[in-house]
Length: 97
Image 1 (cartoon, one colour):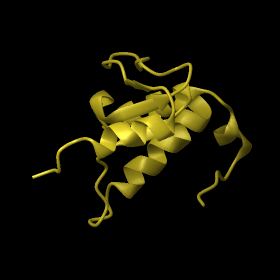
Image 2: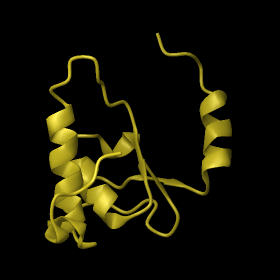
Image 3: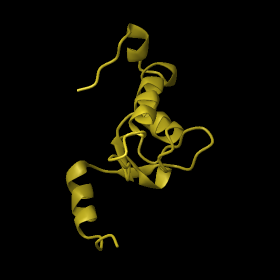
Image 4: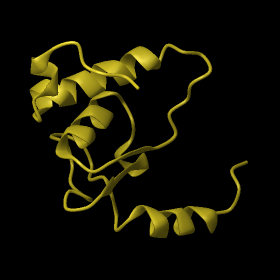
């Protein structure tokens, strides 16, 4: 579990929790054993954070009402109806090279 250090980081805005998520992802990028291949979420702050952290919108899966939305200046994310059906879709993909 990774939690915020201040109340400002908990605000449900791009400047609050969105920036916190982005900064956390950017810090984790420096771990040589960690590679981001996809990102999942359900909030506009997820869309913002993943785009700002350099995760491609084509690899950003958003469940619910915000699926398919884009962060400013970025392509739209991938809309996912629900996790079980998305897992079924992933299982039908050919193996990575």
